Every structure is written in structure tokens, then in C-alpha cells.
Length: 580
Image (cartoon, rainbow, N blue to C red; front, top):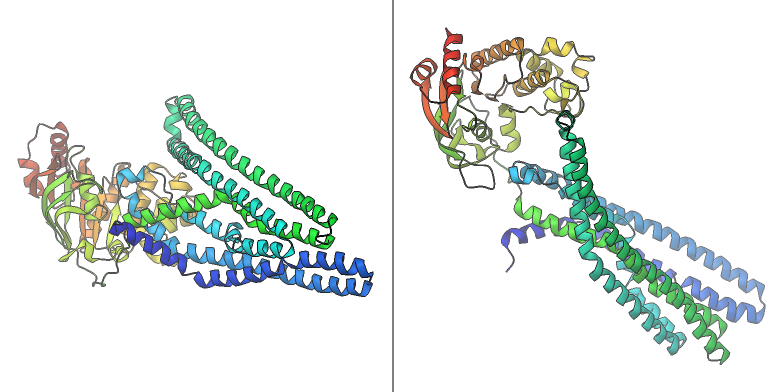
């Protein structure tokens, strides 16, 4: 019995595919008339040889020529329209699944093990769209006409008919061998290419470290090895596919000549006329064309079939997000009750037994040594990683009761590694919203203490920052990331190491932003190593090895917390000094 999840993914895929069934029906009807009009050429040849040449009637030739010209014009127009209809069908299919594939890709990107794998869903979807929009589907619509053309050849003469049957069987055999002998190299080629692309992309992202550490030659050698494996697989597949394609084409041309020889033999024996001989050759060429075309397009068909199976599996493992009932905007009241958190796809908790609450107008600091679970806790608080156990509630509602869009609007999240997007400073602060109010963008920057810094950029808020904010320093990216977190004045703010890349001026701006947020009744949670960030916190949560050690008013926690970890001890001393 089929896995229910896989069945659901297959139904979702096929539902989108069959949504364009009306266009496929139109294409099939057009194909019927296109193939019917394909008989124009053979019939014209038959009439010219058997009537015009025999009678010497030029008016008959003129009438036949005008009729044939009109029929070929109609056939060409229908063939063109068939291509447009199939292109629209492919576009509709892709449009229906584009958003779903993108959303599912984002879901898998939250899983650490999946994030390292190449994202293929959108590429798979494009492969199917290209298959549907290209010439490959023609062979499916034209193939049913092969026996019809062969039947017409049988009417002309049984020997010509049986010759055509043998030719069709021969080409079908080549098509089967093509499928069985090229599918494995095709899969290996795609896998090897994806591995090489993934490695080259990871090297490109770390280009500075690669150059500084003298790793260019070693990375080039490793990439070259992977690329070589991909090229070998590609050459193997291309060689086999090209061999069968060339064999099919050459054999079809030879068979068309061979049937002319058979027809000439029958004509010499006065069993058929010269016109029948020519018409039989043309008809057999048309009968074998879909097979030849299928062999030529087989690689694209295999790729589309693999892509469809991959998408079905992908949709099965990433279910559709169900719509949620809209809740009223909450007050800044967060409650965490005995939660355990692990990365998606694993069951081993990194954080366990954590309980605390944050009230409106309050800031809670979370401190602890490296690998104590602070960043994992931050991801759970903003809904990136769901809790294995326990509950996180915002104004009494668990996080899964909010839609992603609504919850994202209520959260101001500053991750430890700030990621910006290609575009202007303003668009990044506005979270890529096209119709964002410029006054809201500037206000968020002012609250983050980044307004003056942004004005000093070449084009101010309209400065293009490059991919990932490449045109900015680490401190500038951090401050723009803070402005983005504050955009829209969300009631809950979660900052993970917010001062990691900030200078003294940037730290003062951060502290001022947290104080202002508290004054506006916002709840603030700060994960910190450095003491300045917790100087404005009202309460502290101390974590070690993923578990809470202490929680309470800041000064009391700093006084009572003792640990063998020098980092916390030093943090306690520094924080106490900064508070005093």
C-alpha cells in the first residue's frame, strides 16, 4: 500500500498537472487535424504522378497546387497554435506550483541536514515546464497516428504495409534500448553535477577564507575531481543517447529509401503506380517520425519523469500549511513552559526544561557559555524550530495558532549571523515589502540608531548593498538588521548576540533601542555573551549545557550565579560593573 504522505504528494502534483487538461484537449484536437493534413503531401504526389503527368492537364495541376498550398497554410497555423497551447499549459502548471515549491523549499531550509543539500524543487518544476512547453509532447499526440498511416500504406499495397510494420518495430526496439541504457547514466550525471555545484557554491561563499588560508589549489583540486566525475557521467550519457539518436535518424532515412526500392520493384511488376510508390515512402516517413522524435526528446522526457517523482516525494515530506484563524494583535506577553527543543529532523534535545516569562515593557537576558543553547532557544521563541515538548505562548496562544505571515509581523528577530538580501537598504529594512511606508522605514532606522550611518552611504536609504550585504561592513549589516527587526514596531523582540559586530557607538545605539522598546511596552529577549547588552535587562536566565541554571532579577542572578566556566564568571563581573 502506498504511503499516505506520498499519496498526498502525488495527488497534489497531479491535481496541478490536470488543471491544464482543457489545454491538453485543445492540443490533442489540433494534433488530430495537423496529422490529418499531413496526408496532403502524399495525396498530392499521388495525384501529380497518376493524374497530372498521365493526362498532361495543367489546369488540374494548378487547382491541385492552390488546394495544397491552402491546406499547408492551415496545417502550419494549427501546428503553431498547438505549440502555443502547450506552452500555456506548461506555464499554468508551473504557476500553480511555483509558490508551493518555494514555500516547501523554505521549510526544508530550516532543517540543518537539508540546508546543506542543493535545493532542487524549483529546478525540477522548471524541467517539467520546459518539457511540457517544448516539442517533446508532440510525439505523444502524434504516436497514435502511426498505425493509421501504416493502415493507409496497407491500402496502397500489403507488401509496403508489412515493410512499414517491420520498420516501426525496429525503431521501437531502438527506443526501448535507448530508455534502458541511458536512464542510469542520466541519474548519475545529474547527481554528480549537483554535488560539484554545491561544493563550488560553498567555496564561493567562503572566498575570503579560502584565499587567506591558501586553500585555492586544494579546493580547486577537489572541485576538479567532482567536476571530472560529473563530466564522465555526462559524456557516458551523451554518448549513449547520441548513438541511439544517430542510429534512429540514419535508420529512418535508410528505411525511406528502402521502401522506395520496394515500391519501385512493385511498380516495375505493374502492381502499383509510380505515384503510389512515392506516396508510400512519404507516408512511412510520417508514420516513423513520432518514434524518431521520441528518441530525440528522450533525455528531456527522462529528466521530466525524474523531476515529477522528486516533486511528489518533496511535497509528501513538506505538507501544505493550513490556513489559520486570524487572531487579534497581542500584547507583549510571552510564556515559556518547560520546553525541549531540537533541530527539525532530530529527536535529541539541545535545549530542555526551560521555563520563564516576559511581560510587556520588560527585557530578559539569556546568558551562558558557548553551546549552552542560547541560539537554539532564540530559534524556538520565533517559531523557526518547533518545541519537542512544553509550550511557548504569546498572549495565551501557542505559536502554531498564528499564521506565518501574522506571526512574522509580530516578531522582531535579529539572528546571530545577519543575512541581508540583494537590493537597497530601505527594502531590507522593510523586509522586502514593495509598498512599505518610507516613514516607517526611517523610524525603524532611527530607533536602531542607524539613521545617520545610513545617510552617510553613497545613496542613503537607496544604496544597493549587493548580494548578502557585501558592500557593507559587519557592523553596518548588524545595525541594518536591527532596524529590520524594529520595523513595524513588533510587540516581541528577540536579539541573538546583537552586539557581536558592533563598536562602542553601535552598542550604545543598541542599548538605547532596547530602552525605547521597553518604554513602548515591548517585550525584549537578548541572548548575550558581552555584558553591555544585559545591562538594560530586568531579569536574567542563565543556561548551561542546554538547561536553565538560574532565572530571576538581574542583580540577584548575577550575585548568586557561580560556575566553573570562566566565561560566565567574567560576564557576571563585567555586567555587575557596567550596571554599577
